[in-house]
Image (cartoon, rainbow, N blue to C red; front, side):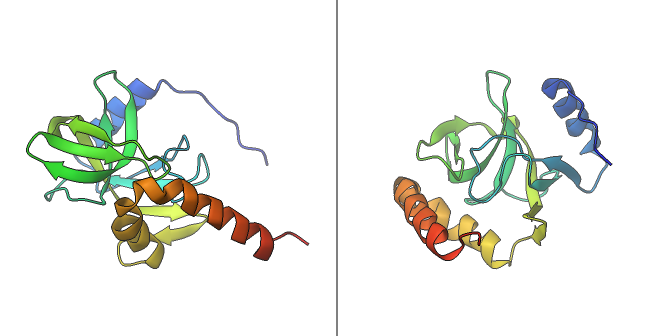
Amino acid sequence: MEQERISVDTALLMEQYRELLQTAQTLPLVATGNSMVPFLADRRDTVYLSRIERPLRRGDIVLYQRESGAYILHRIYAVGPDGYDMVGDAQTQIEHGIRRGQIFAVVTAADRKGRRQEPGCFCWDFFEKVWIRMPALRPAAMRIYGAVRSVFWRKS
């Protein structure tokens, strides 16, 4: 049976998520866009959002709203006196000065390629602790990964 796709106003949906996070333990959200590749793929993977109940730290994936109104799911690159610096896993450019008031949810788990990922899993910890430290090397790392993958994981 084919699933029907519906289109929803993102701003309205996010406002409803903000309200629901006041009472819900976690809320699922399908990842859209490519800024969190290779950890999360567009419309393939789902993240689980929770309200923020602890200090945020480097490597956390958070949902925040830019001054432009856009909602963004990125990792915290650094925590500083002027706010948070953010970067997507596919990006090399760091976004500076995100205020705590702009951040309204933290990702506590993800379904990635159909498998549950949480803190303590190799994949989760690799992106949170290693990948976050190497934005300048990401393009080269992705090219090497692509080359290795094409050799060893070719479809027969």
